[in-house]
Image 1 (cartoon, chains in turn green, yellow):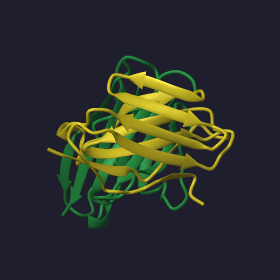
Image 2 (cartoon, chains in turn cyan, red; image 1 turned 180 degrees about the vertical axis):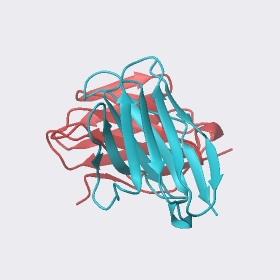
Image 3 (cartoon, chains in turn purple, orange; image 1 turned 60 degrees about the horizontal axis):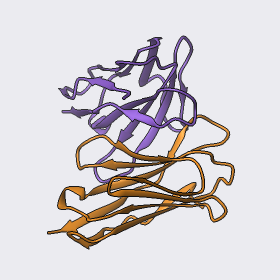
Image 4 (cartoon, chains in turn blue, purple; image 1 turned 90 degrees about the vertical axis):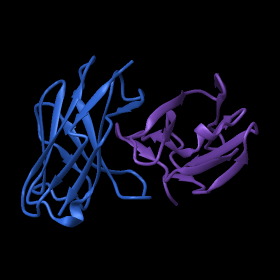
Length: 116
Length: 111
């Protein structure tokens, strides 16, 4: 089955630093990947849609200059949280689908970011 | 009206019982429907996909879809304590390639 790998699984950083999270589709090519954020006991929130070879599409209210997305190849998308602040502490999860738009999303294991 | 609605629960069932999880959606043109399970602190994992009206069974899980009523459900037979998790209903938006998630139903299976 489709496997999505996400790294790192956990990161602690100081306020003001930047953090990069990688998302890879291991056994399939993904022209589109999706980045979600989830706060404790809250629902998944779609942040942006990452498109291979073009700019990401951000959801309303998500700062594109703060959350930089790069989708440089068909198997790799990265999310960089720039100048992180404690309020950016959250669970970030990437996902991708293998096949058509009616196929399910497969999720990475997520990255728990703590900004001190 | 939310695009995908679920009762947040918690839904508490005794071990061995049938758990019934429900979801309604607003976009009548939606084509694909999914159930995900999410354990606390983990990412969602796919349980079932369903695309046409009726029932689809996979082991202890049965997904039911009624497009006329815009309703999709998940039945878990012989519930186990290990089934305790949040169950997310997801619907593919007709106009986009995004999956729209409900807020999830917390299931607690009591031993």
